[in-house]
Image (cartoon, rainbow, N blue to C red):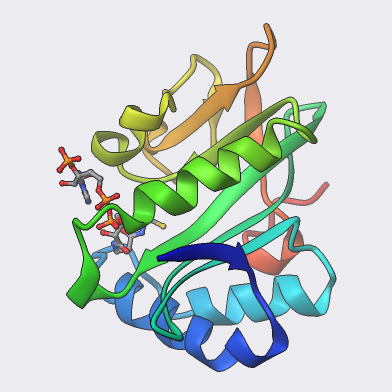
Amino acid sequence: MLIRDETMGDIPAISRVVTEALLLLAQATGTEARIVEALRAEDALVLSLVAEEAGEVIGYLAASAARIGTQEGWGLIGPLAVLPSRHRQGIGTALMTEALRRLRATSRGVALVGDPAYYGRFGFRSFPGLGVVGCPPEVVQALPFDATEPRGELIHHRAFGLDQQD
Ligand SMILES: CC(C)(COP(=O)(O)OP(=O)(O)OC[C@H]1O[C@@H](n2cnc3c(N)ncnc32)[C@H](O)[C@@H]1OP(=O)(O)O)[C@@H](O)C(=O)NCCC(=O)NCCS
């Protein structure tokens, strides 16, 4: 398996993997592939990593710039998606490990919204005062790379359509 940056030719496969994987989530909106497209169209993908095996895209991770309260400089991971037939084979871990390695060089830390049972293993945790309006606080998690205490609302790029901008 190879973890690499997306190329133009990967775009249809990325949409397919994201749509198929996210369908498994109760809270999925069905718009996740379109969010990736909107981030790409706005040149807002800080990372767009694919997991490839035998020429096929089997996993995908996007990262974009985010703010927490007044703190700029955070990376936001999402969506992370692995083809359902390939779950629990280490593909998500490989994508996340590479994303954290790269984001460490450019961000003060990384944040995401997701299942703490999965993301805890990478060092993500919730913090008092860190949140997203409308989300249970435990699913909003961060992994600071320095002594920064993330506090405030996790502001996603507008491509996520969360109506958070001030
Ligand atoms: C979540 C997801 C990306 C994980 O990818 P994956 O390649 O299956 O994960 P890995 O094989 O790297 O799993 C690593 C470990 O996490 C565990 N794990 C996987 N999914 C998990 C989940 N949803 N909850 C808890 N643990 C999970 C695995 O059992 C494995 O544990 P082990 O090392 O003790 O065996 C993948 O299951 C997926 O695409 N799910 C649907 C979409 C989704 O939930 N995306 C994330 C939110 S945006």
